[in-house]
Length: 403
Image (cartoon, rainbow, N blue to C red; front, side):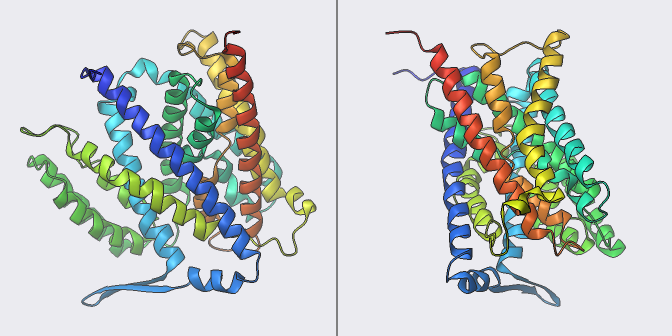
């Protein structure tokens, strides 16, 4: 079999590899989630808590950072996740599917609607609660690994264009989430640390302008930037995104791939198979003690559940349909409205990003909210996964020609 070496062929293989990794990673996420909940609600609960609080410290001279395991995962490992997300966004914008601006309209419309409507639903239920209202961004996220995992379970009859649409929408959704985190979830800013971070950024920019193409100087400075951002009050994971945008996407002479693409290929399996499952393991351990069905109808979990399960598909479909009716975009080849509806429901699988934003939203002053927000995330994401799967199964069966 002769390989297609054209840019389109290479892009198609990249998409397929990405989806395979994300789909398998999604299955691991499910397994890690179920394991965390099972252990947390078993006789091994104390061991689980002890595992989360395993201490770890890094010290260089007078500078030391000491955190329990779950914070090393949330602040450190997730910075690597956001670094890879940043690399993927930059690469796709410059060289991939997102470089064709005409292909951006439909998923961008869906991403905007999929953020706005869930946030509005949540705010309508929680506007009266000064602490609960902080979680408005929790139901705006889409977990690309989980969603693609469910899509892969539907089977090979799913149009490739639909997978690309979901992947593009989720990437744009991640970009919006990064902006939200930067603008709304920072507190107790340290001017000294921000100045130090600005100096590091200036050094990175100077290296870029000097023509530095290798990734390692930027990675070293990125690690220093992570420490500065961590100490500044801005969430440390943003250092990963910032560093990613300094990595070159141009292919050096004598090489076949760019530094950015090489890092994506090297790090993506670690993100899909280690970092995200570990994140799920340390964050999805929700204790059901003292909770009941009525707990789901409290404003915070209800707002998250309805935002994910109802708000996401309404927002995505409303904005996608508007873009198509206005002639700004058209349905992708082989994709039906039923397909789009199924994917819009799948966008309600917030999970990883929702848990991450929820942790930021209720980190301070939200002691009574940390458990019930996770309840809403798990319930809303679970409903979205099941219904989205069923809709897509029906949509693909309708397209199957009779024997």
